[in-house]
Length: 93
Image (cartoon, helix red, strand yellow):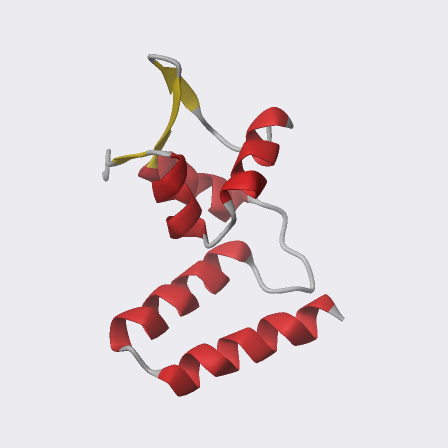
């Protein structure tokens, strides 16, 4: 198990969401979070499980999207990143 703890900045990068969106999810009680010393903290494994449990839709599954983006970034392939962005754009319409 990965007990890595992430801050708002870390979870924002991990999920590819803006920090504003993360705060919105916290306020709505939609994301697993702990408050330690007045600061929000996220356990990476809990976030992974939360993504896996999220309702599947006709749109890209959150975890699939995160994995695709992470893979493309690791491989540093601009074409693959562009394809993912096009896929996301098509899903929003």
